[in-house]
Each structure stands twice: as C-alpha cells, then as structure tokens.
Amino acid sequence: MKKSWEFLKNPQIVGSILEKAFKIERAKVCSFSRLFQHLNNKEVEMMEKFLLLDPEEFGVKMELFDISKGTPKRLLDINQRRNGKFLAVQYLPKPVYLAFKIMNKVLEAETGKKLLILSGYRSPAYQAIVFLHNLKKYDFDFLKVVKLVAFPGYSEHHGWPAGKQAIDFVASSNEDLKVFEKTEEFKWLSENAHNFNFYLSYSRNNGSGIRYEPWHWCWRGIAARK
Ligand SMILES: [Zn+2]
Image (tube, rainbow, N blue to C red):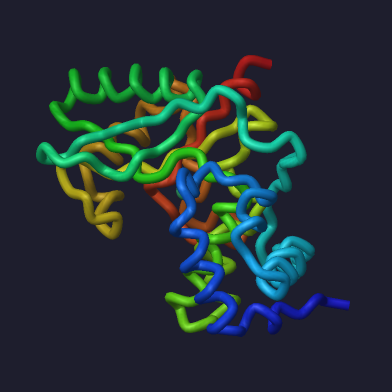
C-alpha cells in the first residue's frame, strides 16, 4: 500500500524543525545525528517517517545513493563574491571544484561571462530541510514539491558515493534562474560542458518526474572514467 505523506502536513512541527535547522552552523553539511541533537522527539519522529517514503510512489523515479558513509571527507569551503559582496558559503568535493574551476576559466576566456555556484554539496539531512522548507513555502502541496526537490538520499547534490556531484549554477550576466536557459552561459554549457564531465540532469521531458532544471549540472567523473 502507498505510504501516506499526510504526517508532514503539520505547519507547527515543520516550522519548528526549520527554525532550529537553519541556526545550525554549517547546516549544509550537517549529518542526521547532528541535526537530531537539535530536535525534540516529535520532530525526530517526523524526520524518520519522512526518510521511509519512496519518491517513486509519488511519480518520481530517481537513483538512491548510499548515504551510510556520511559526509565526504575532503569537502572544500567555497567563498564567492558578487559585486564585492560575499555569498553564502558552498561546499564541494575537491575534484568537482577543480573541474568546475577549469570549465569556468574556459567559459570566461571564450565568452567573457562566468558562472557562480548557487548550490553545491548538500548533505542528506540538509536535503530533508530543503524539502520541508519548500513544502512550507508551497503551502504543503506535497505532489508539487516532489517534482521540484529530491528526497533525502536521492539528490545528486549528495551523489558523491556514486562519483556524481551536482552544482546549481547562476549566470554572472543574469542571476534570475527563470531566464538561465536564455543566457550565453547556458548556451555555452549546452555545447561544451560534456568536455569537462558536466551533464544536464533534468532536461526538458527528462522522464524522471523532476521538472526541467537548466541550472542543475552534474559532474560524473568516475562514471566517465570507466
Ligand atoms: Zn540542483
């Protein structure tokens, strides 16, 4: 029988989880055990039930990553500036960041434009928080959010155990994601990113159930080395 998601429809508990989670230092790389230290029993219970849901039951077919090993050891802290101001710190495994840096240099040399990292590594626990944040934002329209945000364990933002790591890009020429696919940066990525082992995961009509995401590119270095 299909598991119900209705237990998530609790604005009070979800709101409290989010408030506590966003105060945690380095929340983006937080483990479940560290997150649970900040939550009460009811909140932990909700998170544990959430982890038992299978996205396929809600129309989304995605790879489940082995998240038992926890956060990758060598994550780099990435500090970026836009118009002189520092952006929120992002994290990436070193080989992925190096591949991105090389690609970004070539992009800049050829077009004069650059990419910034909007989102790099996100731990499974933080992915759960991102999901709940969107659930609240979209007024608990679960079936809508399922198409926008991966379940914890299923996101390429923590696909590192399988040699994959997604980055959400933002264009230096226009930071609005809604027009990302119209930017010169996107056009260049479409033609050249594969040379740097970056691939568009959710193309139009991609068949996974996830919406078209022109800004989400996944580095698949290990698979490409086979
Ligand atoms: Zn993404």
